[in-house]
Structures are given as C-alpha cells and as structure tokens.
Length: 415
Ligand code: ATP
Ligand code: MG
Image (cartoon, rainbow, N blue to C red; front, top):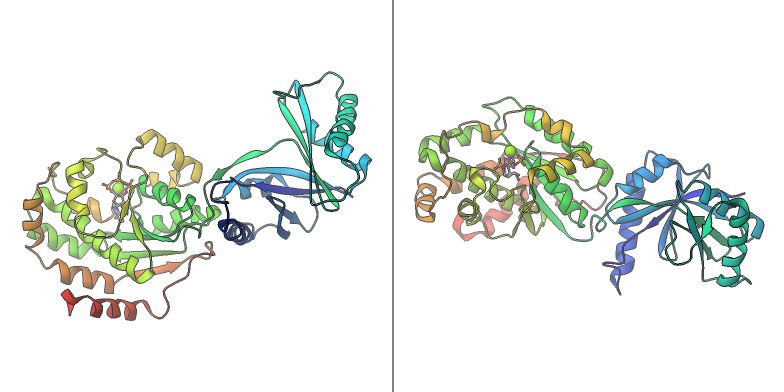
C-alpha cells in the first residue's frame, strides 16, 4: 500500500564533513520533541533527507506545518512512499502532480541511492513521464525550466515520490551552536531576537527582569506565554525571572535622572552575564535595534556594553520595526506582546533620558551605588521555570544558588 509521509529537506550548510551526523542527529531529536502531539511512528535519516512516518501511514498537512517550524528544516514535502512496483510509483506520481497546484509545464527527475533496482534513472524518467503525459494531456514537458518537478527517488526497496514542497524556517538545529542567555522583555523585539539566535542553532535561556514588587507580575506571565508560543521551534529550555522593582527604585534615587536607564541596563547585563556563567552559556542576546529608542544610540549601547566582558549579540540591530513586527506575527508572539504590562523599565523612567551618554559620567554614576552587592543579591533572588520543549537544554548541575556561591568565591573582587 502506498504510504503518505513527510520528507524533510535541510540545507547543505553546516553539513560538511564531521558535522553532518551531529547536525542530523540533533535535528531528529528536536523533531521527536516538536512532534509529540502527532502519532509519529518513526523519524529516520534516509539518503540526505529525514523521513517522518506516522502510525496510520497517512501524514497530514498539519504534521508538515509543525515540521516547518523546527530550525534546521529548509523544506518539507508531503511525499508518497511506494514499493518498487512501476504501476504503484507511476500512480503516486500522477497524484503528486495533481496536488501541485497551478502549473503549465513539468518534468520528472528520477534518482537512485543505495539501490540495486534494475531500472536506471533515465528509464524511470521516461516511464513516469509517459504516465504523466497520458494523465495530464493539456500539460507540457519542459526539462529546462519546468513549473513543477516530480521527484522519484529510489532508496533501497522503496520509492519516494513528491512534487511540491513548502519552505521551513531554515537555520540550524537548536543545540548545534551552544547556549546563550537572552534578555527577554514582554515587548516585540526580544522574543524575535531570541527566536533568531535559536534558529541559528543556539539553545536559549531567557532572563526577564520584572518590576515586582513595585508592579504587578503581569509581564512575567506574558514572558511565560511568549516562551509557550515559541514551543513549536523548541528554542527555549528555561526562563529566569528577576524581581527588579526594589533595586530599580534604589538606582533611581542614587543616579542622575538621564542616566537611570543606562544604570538599569548595566545591572541587567551583569546579572544576565552571571547567570550565563552558571549556565555555561557563551553569549548574551538583546533585542536592540540601532536608534529605535533613546537607549539604543551607539553611545548608549557602548556605555551599557562596557559593564560586561561576554559577547553581547544583537540580532535585530539592523532591522526596521516593520520587519520585526512581521516576524513576531510569523513566530506567534505578536498578540502576546500587544498586551501592555509595566515591566521594570517602565517604572521609574526618566522624563528626559540621556541619548548620548559620556562614559566618564556613566562610570561616575556607576560608582555612586553598591552595584556589586546589588548584582549579587539579584542573582540570589532569581526564580525560574523549566520548559520541556527544548531537548538540547541541560540545567546546571546541583542547586542554582550553590553554583552562584561557587562562582562568587572564584571571583577575587567578591571574596
Ligand atoms: P523590546 O521590544 O524587546 O522590549 P524595546 O524596543 O522596548 O525592546 P528597550 O526597552 O530599550 O527596547 O530594550 C532593549 C533590550 O533590552 C530588549 O530588547 C531586551 O533584550 C532588553 N530588555 C529590556 N527590558 C527588559 C526586561 N524587563 N527584562 C529583560 N530584558 C529587557
Ligand atoms: Mg521594551
């Protein structure tokens, strides 16, 4: 019986040499986790593709749609899997071409991998081509620039047949690029920047600074909703929340109004860097986009960046708001981020923030409050929630706070 299954195509990038099996194995693992809601019976590598089969042998459009969200997937085809019987695979080719939408011209592309099947690809092209010409008498063959190509791929004892494929999100499988800590507010930008580094293969650990106890905890719930919305892509393993309201009030009392935001951000980055060290993450990620708001001028980015030594990645630095919003729609975070919730940064906001901070003034303000004690206490007070959507996430071993103490002991400035 002809079976319906999903064939996953991935980019050749990152596949060269030794990387190839690491990449493929991680993609198979991630697909298993992402497709838990479907009756998947097997996910297996076959000759440059991954085949996803279901127990009812009838893979659906919904399954294909879920696969397309997984980073590392370039395209997905809802394919037919037949035996080596000519009549069976020709019939499958007719069905596949019939499902390919509007077209005027087509061609057949037969391939054979690891098979002893007696027909050669040229013979198969001719055979299937003749069946298609008979079934679609008003369509023409065009071997150079066809509207549709019907692929007939023989692998061992099976023939895979498909004509259409839909694009996936591309990128690399989550877990192949190491771990990052992302700064996640409940605004539009940082969920998108988190997803973008996740799509490049990074396992993401977001940290959210909430205004609690000076504000309600709405922004924390929104951040959890954002992480749930990102579940289909499997990029996030754990969300940290840092109650920051009290400390923000202290900073606002201690430093010149115009420099408040820069001080908040420096503290936030240092806390995130400390969490990253505990987590074994190698970079921080923010949703900043150049010039978008007062705190995102080059001067201010430099003044904030100076507080940490770990690389700070800013995947949206050159993006326009419209592009970011379009992406937020695509990844399902837009509606959540439309809800307004005061997070730490709307509280104690200055009326006129400095747009071009001078480093000398910044460092002077920085020394006017006990930032070291503050960062230490904030890291002590972190809370977190684990999400099961990301198979490459491994929590730091042992209780978090013990790790923090170990780390502090290792830093001469804090002994
Ligand atoms: P976003 O849409 O991500 O909130 P934004 O346009 O509001 O960004 P800013 O408020 O200047 O810009 O924030 C810049 C970046 O700083 C954010 O993208 C995020 O990475 C980080 N950030 C801001 N507020 C918080 C917060 N409360 N918790 C964690 N990170 C934050
Ligand atoms: Mg914001």
